[in-house]
Length: 257
Image 1 (cartoon, rainbow, N blue to C red):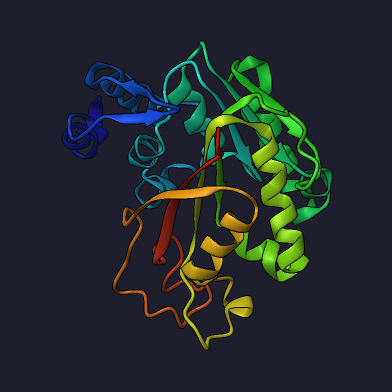
Image 2: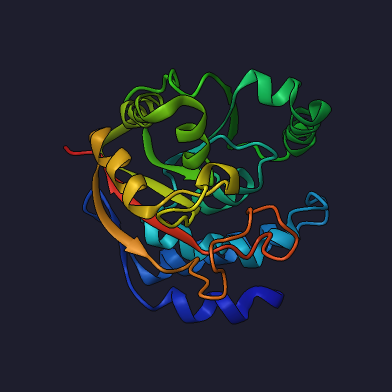
């Protein structure tokens, strides 16, 4: 498993995971860790991906969410596709990943950077188990076909841009895409009461929990995997002093059966 074995090995045997009552064995977890580590070392990997590995901790995050080989996963708001690529490795060749973006993100944001990057990522059948899924956030489709969805660092934007009602509608669209008992992972930058969280691109965890529950999910577990006590929550998340090192929460929320 090369240079990543040091952080993967201790957590492979730490616990078992479950989605919808089906448990991943230690062997399954170890195989997933090895696939992710191999993808991290792929010679054709995007040049900006490696710097995100320590911050994103994909294996540990996916283990917490109960992801397993052969599942259907949804990367909501994939942008340049870092998480998409890690999900593709995690679910393996028998799984499927829907890499979701809005058309506007692919064609207009950053002069088309995200569209070009996704084209490069998927060119020549490089990630054969990934499907580019271009839809609006509140109209994802895929009704009842997804085992695990991931929403990373975007819920604060939904709340800022679309208000509470719009954010709940987007979460409801994710709920509809999930199978009964399916899981949504929500990660975002921690905001604190009294701060200008809109400007800082942060959200209070209690606010996030409320939105997720209002959309119909049950928040069943929380992780401190991305906690950073050195982040005093006063800096905008793209500030060089804190970029990729923000204090973040991670929730596991389940669609009721």
